[in-house]
Length: 475
Image 1 (cartoon, helix red, strand yellow):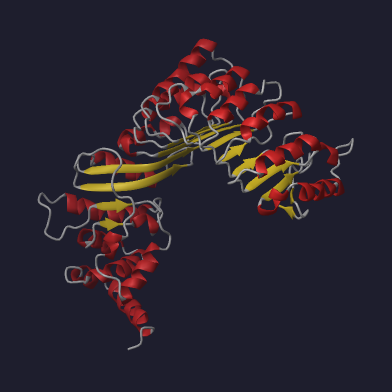
Image 2 (image 1 turned 60 degrees about the vertical axis):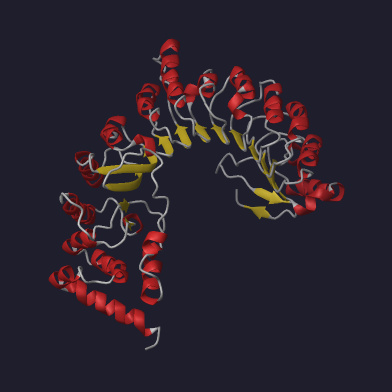
């Protein structure tokens, strides 16, 4: 029989078996392991809940990657799978054929089921499912429990939907036998009171990435910080759009910032910290940074109002000396002394790979101060400086200092001010003449990807990027 015909015969056999639920369920005991994935997919597609429940109990592999097949919010199918797991857990002694140990609800591989099942139809060995497991070792608690459920959650509604409520309550009631391991938690536009119960259910020690984008007030962030401090394996933290209400006194504001800072004291694995449009940072950046216990690899501060004292603390922070990626985008530095930034660049010169100073209002005079330190960033590969109003001589000097760096690859620079007329109209031919001059005078440009960004249009808000050949690119 040809290999092309075999998958088709397998499909027909699986479809026939699923149509007869009683037969399918009775056949599971003797069914070869390689037939379980295609049969499970067929039962899921046809929404045969009873078959799915029975298959979970008889699943021959240690891991069931359900998140690659279904959406967590599919309550009917989720309930069918959890019912099967309940049937296993209800047995006092683990049956001889109880192999399932991990229910993975993450969408870790969109093609996992189709690719693996096709391989099973040909030459894939029975233990392939176990070999393809991804990151099932729990980063948190070492307590031994019969079963582990791994999930990534994005809470992006104002109240948890029925599926998440059901799942959260299910896990809470089985906390003695189920280890609920959440690796990534995104909280988007959700009221804090709606997620409190979930935070009390999940093992916070397992969480490795957290994104907060909720438009919370600062006191609410303070409440969340009591949970944040227990996420001891957290590696990435993004906090955005936290507001500081006008009714907060300076003392109360400092108190709530201190709550977050105290939480950071427990995060000795934190590598990446992103702060976006957080009004509470103004005058309090030192409170946050001085509580970091280990050196960061990435620090991103975007659209955050800062004082000059904040920038000064930034330059002396001991946990920033090994930064690989630094973003200070849309942080207004126009009226600040350039010395703190110059000092910071000098301290990270041996490790910095990415630097984003986009739209910071940096002037020619400030640029001249930081250039010597910038030119010593020997590992720098990517540099963004668009949005700063710079004249041609200063811009040419900046290009000369950056493109000669041995590992430098991509640079985005502002269109020089001489390319605009008195009314702010961009004249492309002036930029073309400047680019041609650069080609003649800077031999290092040939192997670099250099772009010039225009000021965004006041009507549509869009800008444009031009390369050295004056080819226009999307921003």
